[in-house]
Image 1 (cartoon, rainbow, N blue to C red):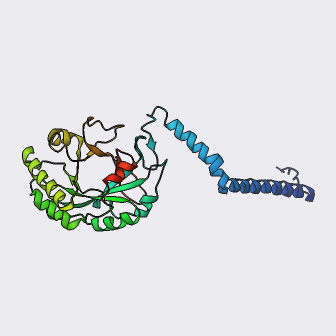
Image 2: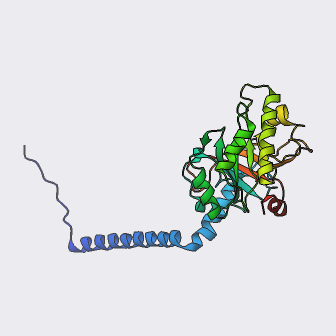
Image 3: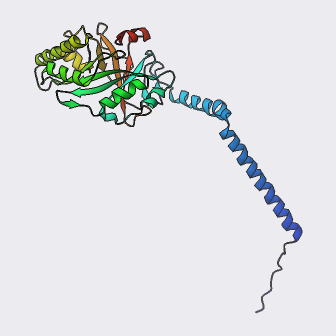
Length: 287
């Protein structure tokens, strides 16, 4: 059976030219749109007038229902009470190699790192492998430092103090030395207190300055309260809007989180605040 062919429409030069003109017009429009978007994104005004207000609005939405005096600081990834103006960290080998210049440069809403407590020793034989580097580099970045010793009640308090002083110098510009007391080591509380008193007395005798005692809030209430009231305290109590240690408790530093993110440190770090103002803080520094 004979097939009948349908007539084929042939493109004329005029229709081809019209299509090319339309394609060129859309291509030009796309290029102009892309160029305009790049100009907006690369413009310094974009952050100031578009991105920043949007980010602020989004943060405001996220903060709905939060305590305004205990907000989340996104850079540090923790909540920090507003009422404290002096902030710091404490570090050991667990934080690895630290870029202290980046630590010092970090700031969000006037929250910046001004002091650091650095682990030096533990017991009578262990020296923190990063102590000397941290003790040298942190002050170079302009951070006020204090050295701490992890105290073991099973060891002689006086021997631990001697070992601590052999490792960590105490000089002008430093915060007082610190005894980190967290465990009984299976001993009666009286034995722990006796060795701790020996440690503190030796440090004070050799440096002329009373050390600070670091401990957790529960440990302080159970074993230290009413025994070491003449010593300034640094107390750990996490994720709370306030440290409720009692009106008469002689605390000066509060370790409020163990999971802060800080520029220059590749691991979570403990975050602290100082109870007083800048004048009170300066009085603590050894002159």
